[in-house]
Length: 498
Ligand SMILES: [Zn+2]
Image 1: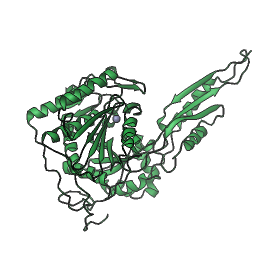
Image 2: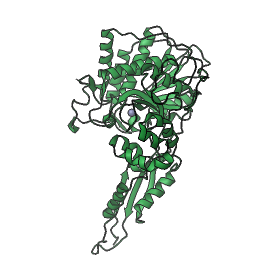
Image 3: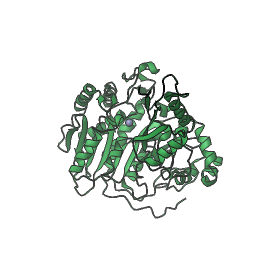
Image 4: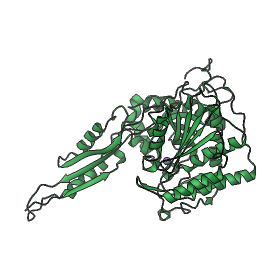
């Protein structure tokens, strides 16, 4: 008789197994002032005089603002949910497509905009600039959302777009229909005002980002590659404006994602040895597996905060922290263990610290497997890497980094009180598929997060303030025009590094 053969497979997507890293924070590599920072005139800006390309301003009548909000609400009300890579809500996606065509008539009829559907439901827009020698850039956003269940405790049904105290509630309000609608609304306004870009650009709207973008983003990139397109930079969702979310940091900061973590899916399995059913093994396979998982949960990835690239960034941001913290930040070589303990006490920052595993130390799946194996430390448990990818390369953010400086300038002209700094994105986005056609990928939208807001991502009560949505439209409206400069101004001569 054949022995008992039981095999339990467990796919576990463990945050603690991610092979790379974090840290939200960042570098402030310019800066002239230490304690206070006012960006009057050029103070605080590293670059000299900018060519003025923002001739068109955005003045909206109360009726236009009402319409703009109505378009956004309509977008939230369509449940474009991605369940799995092969199960997305196709009828909602079709409805969404119809909505876009209805509310943005100029975008879909202008002679400077070419529109294509890719992978059936994703959109690629090519906006032709008047100066063909300027390298194009690309704006990304995604149409799909993760599932949402009202029973989880929403204050308003997740696809209602209900307005409560100046906020619109609904799945997709910050991830990522604010960008989909914000980008197209901005372009619609520009076209209405007779705008033709100097620099060409693309807009990519994926329909399956939440389930890896294998039909949307992947096919858009394939198409662009087949046309020989190279991009100056890509701007996608990712980081945001964090206000009071980072312990000890004075004032709000706009963090522009310059990289994102890698990811690993690991399979654990146990095959019990053949034996007599009358003599069951002392430990069942499921028991062995359960304790392996327990060990993994009890031993998260080591805290490596302060040992990776985030160290230099934190050191640069040090002057933005109050005194004791400032001292600690400036001396990470000594204090990083202490600092990470301080940050992990707050749920908002814990995720960033805890999943930190410096890029340089865990840059391959092999290392992840070794770590999981040694944590499980039971040779009856087989550990296999199912799939995964390495952390993304770090995009440039110096004074010559075109995309970074354009985004930064746009943010600072709208929000002079913000510190702008690079950061690393904890989540993955469609933009990772673009790494072969551009050197620089940035992940940012000026969504404003206060304490507790990061949990709304993929969580309950996802929402955006009406004012913030208007700011997002304004941001893309300015950003598109800011891209029309031929090149960045030279570094400011009277500037000195901190
Ligand atoms: Zn997203």
